[in-house]
Figure 1 (cartoon, rainbow, N blue to C red):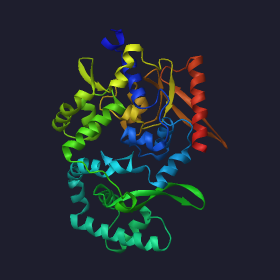
Figure 2 (spheres, rainbow, N blue to C red):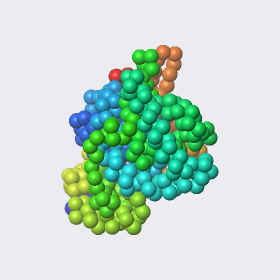
Figure 3 (cartoon, rainbow, N blue to C red):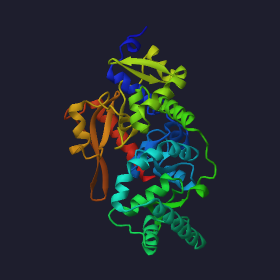
Figure 4 (tube, helix red, strand yellow):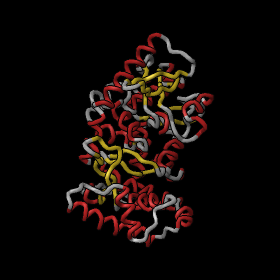
Length: 376
């Protein structure tokens, strides 16, 4: 049996994750295919989310991901952890059914501080629907956040001090609203999305019970993120560990267990099979966006990011993740987009202070791909 299977290194584990996430081996044929495989892709920063998809779907441009959002073949909402993610439209409602209740409970104290009641949320739902109908009659594809906030204010619902965003977020958590097409301004590509009624934008949703849904969510998480631990999944999904373990019992016969560092990690049989022949990508170098699932999709990130470098990726632990360079399955630095007059470029920021010649060439090839992608 190969040494990689019996005693994998952290870099091998990292490369297995790259494979699972479609970052090695050719990726996915279309934008919806990539998002559906990943199940939920962190997307609070839209530019980062576009490139995260682009790295997994060769030959695409940022406009292709925006087009998928405009067409509703991919949606962007708050399915878990109170954070925006990209998700397949048919998956959003059943995932919200599993994760939404716990999130709403966690926000109850903040809602009391803001004076938000269930009646206020229902009132804002009615206001949002009425506003959307009026805008639709005028030819608009949806309502902007500013338009909804103004409608809330006109109806006596205060939106200051984050009250508005909590009201709007609650409407999305309860599957009454969802972010729809991109909002363009004066012929330019918009950076915001318009809000539309959930059932109009997503007419066909899958229906899964809680236990069945958690089992599917776990299976898809492991297939797209493995090797991962059950604690990684519980953190990622915010599903209680007891329920996560029960789901693992139901699906573990379709997964492979791998021991690393005295803990159990799970991955798909297809990914695990690479341990027999050698895991690819030992010389790969990827310029991934900030907030990419390769790093954010796990509770314990030390497997691919040395703890002494963590603050270089998240300065001051402020929750804002810098773009990362991943070499052979390990985060080896960050990188930045630079602007000099009308010239846009990229610059590497390796932890070691310098990249070798081959890595330097690979990084700049990645940089050119990124600039082409974002311009398209």
